[in-house]
Length: 114
Length: 111
Image 1 (tube, rainbow over the protein chains, first blue to last red):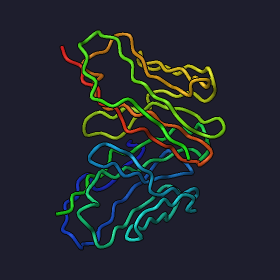
Image 2: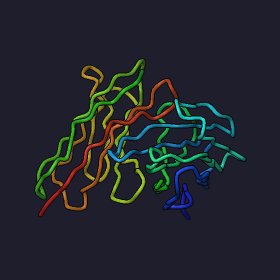
Image 3: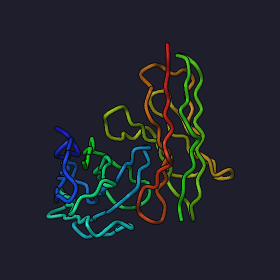
């Protein structure tokens, strides 16, 4: 059983489209995250939810909207896609948002905007 | 705010060579420190961690010691293998309730 699963693994779409990425974790963790990894491998947090409540919302364009229907799921919807949105998006989860909690990452969604 | 600085890569080593990847951090309070590894085409995996000063994290022959006096958490391995080729990320978890990553260091091990 995959602990943190993301779908789709690859996503190629045209500029201006709207797309969603789904994430599910079966670890019973309370906290979930979205990270963006750019072409230089730099990882930056976008959002974090704890028990379905948004706790971290970094400086991200409001075209990006996370949704957490329950604590096992965290989806990411992106409106009006731009070329600069091309990246690998990682979902992660942890037992709590506190210090010392290691994260479990999904395998990533490679988004290519053409 | 919190930040992590890693040595720039790529690091190219022959098999069985000694590895050091430097990592220093800036944070308020007493953060937890981590090393993650990313193999090609995969997500990040936790390699090791340390939650307080002088703790040593270890896994799969890799080690790192939490040095508060030098704000460092350098990754070491005595004898690398081709299968260790990956990108290694140093990270910290501080008061902001999130993991802050370094820029990653690519390791290439050759026969």
